[in-house]
Image 1: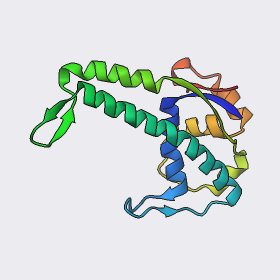
Image 2 (image 1 turned 135 degrees about the vertical axis):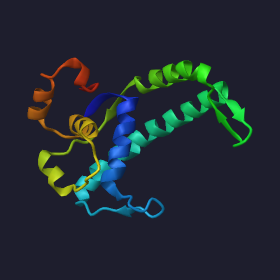
Image 3 (image 1 turned 90 degrees about the horizontal axis):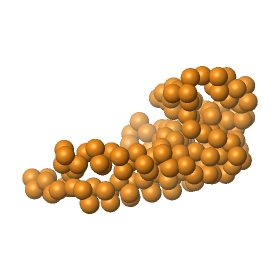
Image 4 (image 1 turned 45 degrees about the horizontal axis):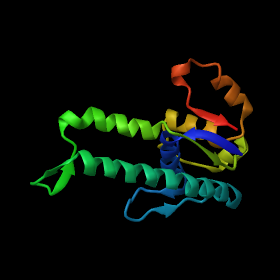
Length: 156
């Protein structure tokens, strides 16, 4: 199903999907979680899609650091000087707010019973549900909340 979403939400989905699919207790040796094949397929398909957005954002951020940054001689790294931070943040926000459309498979609410992850916060969970779960009751409830708490996700 086509979903209109911003790149910032795609990055959040990328992080959530990695938490769901892998146990990263030991970051050097992530272990795949046991998830039914049909659910894993949908999640991995979405992960492959949003990974491109995640990589695009990181590439763009690195370009901004190269363009605006100065070499920190002691660490041999570029850093954005304080006076350019507002410009840097504005450039990043412009990318994060960019609207794109993706074709995501939706999970059924009962599919969520097969997922056991403890470190997903409420905002992440809301983005996950609004984007990847076919739960019309939840979407109706959320659409009645104040605008500042709504996530920019639109089903096309």
